[in-house]
Image 1: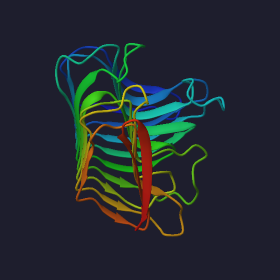
Image 2: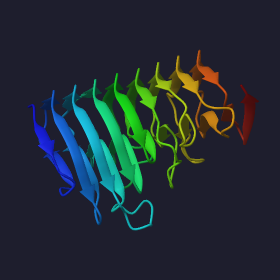
Image 3: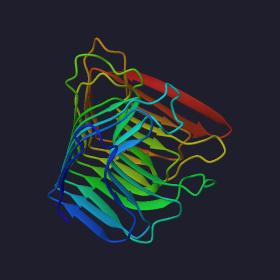
Image 4: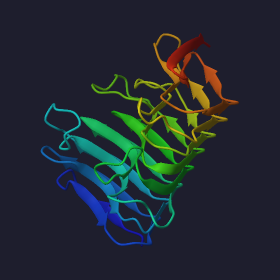
Length: 261
């Protein structure tokens, strides 16, 4: 399916899909705005797999209510979610995503959660070769296990830091996640790559490989941050002008270290 949807800053959503095996490609979704609810260009709810490929997504804004995390302020370029584990694979690839802003603007967000799972349920998603420019919170947010984030290019040229910045690639309570070959250029949000488990459930299967992270030395930032992970693999990353910070478990204690690069 190929669509051109222009919300002219009056519509909050561009397209919403609830069926399995949807294919959205070669479309354009732009100019979505909401003052009181979440705003999304592409929103997909399915466990049965989807392909979102070679689309242009621009200008999604949710103003929010100054209470982060409660929903009304969520801006999403591409959202893929379900309340149980995925039964088929999904692909988000080759998209150009720009200006996902507002209270909590995330360009790509995958969430597979039934309300109780820790870690999050399997999403079986590959996020590959997307070019993302300007967000107000995260470029890519992963709340699903079995996800690969590969060869995405993340850029930021806004003159001011957003009000609620987070990590460029943020992995939260998700196992068997691979972050490979991404390019994160200087930005005014937070860490480069962050992985956070919990003390009761350290995350397994985390791999962070062959990424390039750049940051201005005038900005205090952490390049790669891992907390409550079990035997992560972090290799061959090129980090310029930031800090490499890691936390690891050597039972029964948690240790952390930093390296200035």
